[in-house]
Amino acid sequence: MIETVGLSKVFGDLRAVDDLSLALAPGQVLALLGPNGAGKTTTVRMLASILKPTSGYARVAGYDTVRDAGEVRRRVGVLTEAPGLYSRMSGWEYLEYFAALYRLPRTERKPRISRLAEQFRIVDALPRRLGEYSKGMRQKIALMRTLLHDPPVLLLDEPTSAMDPESARLVRDAILQMSAQARHTTIVCTHNLPEAEELSDRIAIISHGRIVVQGTAAELKSRLLGPPVMELRVRAGSVDLRDGVLSLVKQFVTVEGVGDGWVHYRTSDPAVVNPILLGALAEARVPVVTLSELPQSLESVYLQVIEEEGIRGSTG
Image (tube, rainbow, N blue to C red; front, side):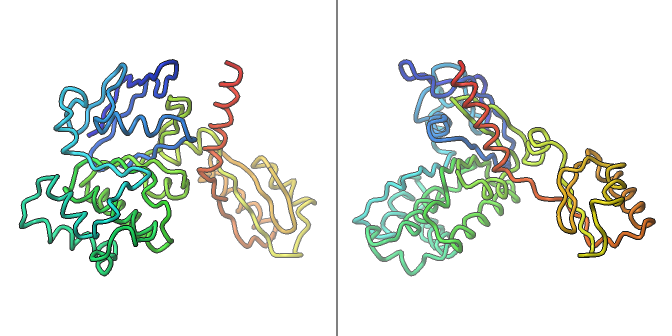
């Protein structure tokens, strides 16, 4: 549904996007992450047929973004970071205006707007002028505008920015529902890393215009952070983990930390090693309370990638 090959954009001496290649199937959600100025917005603008690439190409819903720009624009819904609303219009007037621009049949406009308004819980605000809306409400209207013509491709820049937790949850649920139904292929640009991990099937991190890593969240964590860290907890005061018990644990795994009643360790094959370790601890009458995997955060992956890229950039 979205394909780019060698996609690049140069502004004078600035190479904003550099040899970017992506492929997304129908229904997939890609989180495009990166610092400000990394090339995310330029990428979205090329995919939306707003900017022409300097080299390479992109296809959206089967259409070339340069040769078939009009067809691409009919099939994408773009949410920009700044909503760009017409503040003197009411919510109803604004959405009806864009429904007309999208050439929705008159009989479909009101039902479509009403359905979206109910979904995002903003029905009562529609008669009011947009200039009276809060930032979060404006973001909802902008997202409704993006969804009005039910496009197969969504390009969303910070879709939950300025929203309260309840509203942000509504938006995330809507994106997940559309993905589950394979109704939309979506690229989400966000600085909200927990949100990116929740919403996306795949993650791509862009730096200096290049995608430096991409894959599922689990793949990136495994590749960049190493094997998962396990936490073994025993009953408080029951044993001294620094005695023979620690020696026993070290026979099976690499210990990374020890505290009052807990041990942290890594193993590349927890499905095999953990049962063997628990068996040995039970035989030694060690009162194990829990054995669990400590969560590895996408934030750790992101910061490691950006730090490495910063070092590379500073050294040429």
